[in-house]
Length: 85
Image (tube, rainbow, N blue to C red; front, side):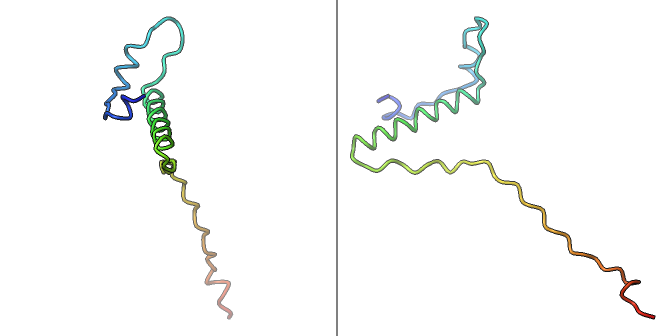
């Protein structure tokens, strides 16, 4: 864990996925591997901060963007109904 804390380690999840043992069990996706590494890095930061007496870092702001709610259509009035003869 000190290695991750003290060095900027670069990991290639695609290479890890390709080297994963093919013994009949599920092979994790490259994305799952990278997310797990990010989780480990975050836990190392929290542990290092608590050891130093600092508050834990803020939560990640990476969230899935919400879809916009469609606007309500304005009611279109028929001109023939509005005209009085």
